[in-house]
Every structure is written in structure tokens, then in C-alpha cells.
Length: 306
Figure 1 (cartoon, one colour):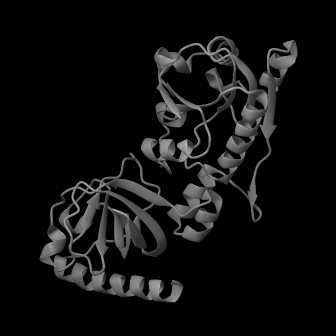
Figure 2 (cartoon, rainbow, N blue to C red):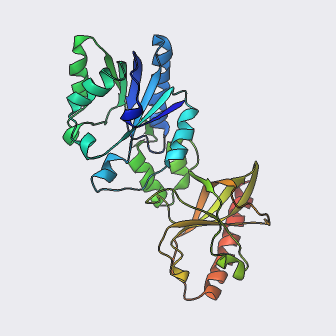
């Protein structure tokens, strides 16, 4: 899959099939759209192009929200789904003023040679979000391209959406979120040096930066962590570490029976079960007692599950 960062790096394409959206988390609804897109791409013998935006329009307009996947995670997931080109459009003030009609004509038709467009049923685009499936349908009547929308995907009786998954994760409903994602929620990142406070109380941790301005999860979790082809069990804290006066959201994991130097390694933390919310403790001794209880809780979870 070819990554195209910005419209300035986009070379004219003579024909393509296209889908557009934020695709945060690439949940089962997104996967359905992409599956249909790649099928149409093969049938027409044209490359399939997925268009996403950075930053997300909501963030640009001052309504930031937690993101389910970092850019790297999203790109890695997309590369496994058969997309030929991933066009990331920089969402800035100039682009935000582009009308829906101009977006279709100047970018989708003139630059990408769009022959078919597939979008979700709730997708809006263009200045003041005036672009819709109905507009695309109207513009397609001249025969230059066709357009189709995919109906909502249900999981149980709930519509699958990134916002619903964020809500489930924030409430610690990891299994329900995993059903909508089509996989367990995880965070990938390189292990870095921390303050090493955990060593002083007998719980050394590995530290992984969260490449998100807002994390969709907070609290203490039973997790598995994949490092260098091996999988380990442990307890993870995602939070601000109030005992030591922290303010930045960090991810720290205490792995059971683990004593290796893995700084610089990439680690994938998979969230299995929420133990509790993060809370303040008066001192490190009180925190140490609670961590013992958290470790016991996590080990019980793994013994019952595996």
C-alpha cells in the first residue's frame, strides 16, 4: 500500500475507486466498507484509494476526542486490508473552506479520476458539512462516476461506530468493544526509559508512550504484552500517576516473572480486563499495597480465562 501524505504529493490518477472517512479504529463497519471497495476495485481493474484526514476535522474545529488508533496503527491495519493507496489530506483552514462540490470536482474527479465512490451512511464532507451521499448521487447523474453507500453494521442491537467503541472502552467494557473492533483493543509503541519509581517498591515497569492527545482508556487493566515474538501477562496502568504528581497520560506495565532489558523494542499491549479506575494514594507504601491486590486480581483473571 502506498502512503500519500498531502495533496501536494498526489500525482494525477486516470481512474480509481474511492472511500472517504476518518476510519478511527478500523472497526467491523469500516472493514465492511473496505471489503466492498476492494471487490469493486478488482472487478473494474482500478486501484482503490482510501482518503483520511489529519488532524481529524473534529479536532481542527476545537472538539478533540479520544482516538482508537494512532496514525501508525491505522496505517498498519489498512495495509492488511487490500488498499492500494492511502491518501492523507492535511485538514487545515484552507481545506476546511473547500465546498463539497469543489472537493468532488477538483480532487476526487480531476486528481483521482474517481469512477466509483463508496461511503458510510452517515458520512458528511465539505464546507459546513454540506456534502452527503445525496449530493454525490446528484453529481453522479452525468455518468462520470457511480456512488454507493453501505448501511450501518449492527453488533447485537447496537450500531457499530467509533464513538460507541470509545464509550465502551471508557466504561471498561473491553469484550463489547472488541466485538465491534473485530479484535481486542491494543496500543503499540516502543519501550522507553521511565522514572524507574516502580523499582523502588518492587514493581518495575516497562513504559510505552501513548501517541494520542487523548487516550480512550484510563485505569488499571489485566493485559498481555507482545515483545520480540513472545507474549507476557501483566498489570497495566494508563493514567497520570497522581502519587508522584504526574500530569501527562502514560502507559506502564508490570509484567509477571519478567526481567529483561527491552528498551527500544516495539511492544503491543492488549487490554483484556479492567480492574479499577486510577486513584490517588497518600504515599508509595499505600500504592504498593494496592498494586499487590491488582496483581492478584489480574492473575486470578488469567487463571480463570486461560
